[in-house]
Image (cartoon, rainbow, N blue to C red; front, side, top):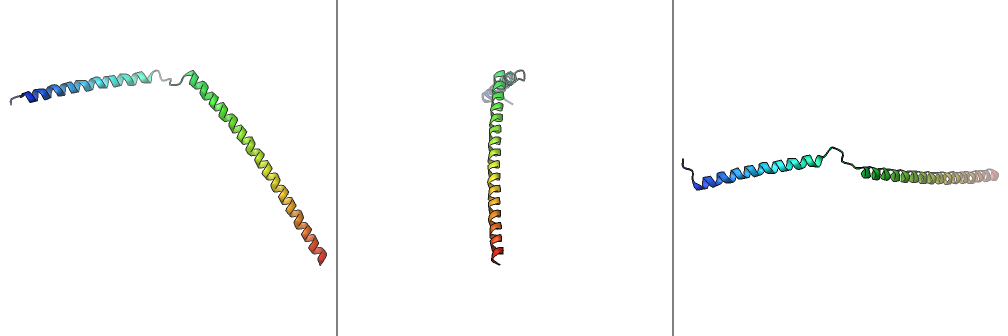
Length: 101
């Protein structure tokens, strides 16, 4: 079997591509190890900002809960007053009907 110039060029290209892929793999592996670091991905500033967000969210939740409680109390008092008014009007009608008989 005779090795032609074409075959030699293909062998050179293939070996260079293989070597280039190995270099690329090594570079990607080093990048992955460098990006991992020591496992601590959050800094003190990030922790402080998370605490501030948590405290703000907690304060807003308390505000919403107190507002909802006040609204519920208002609704309950209106409901009670309406019921009492209807009951008194019904009792008055009932009494007036008894007096007509």
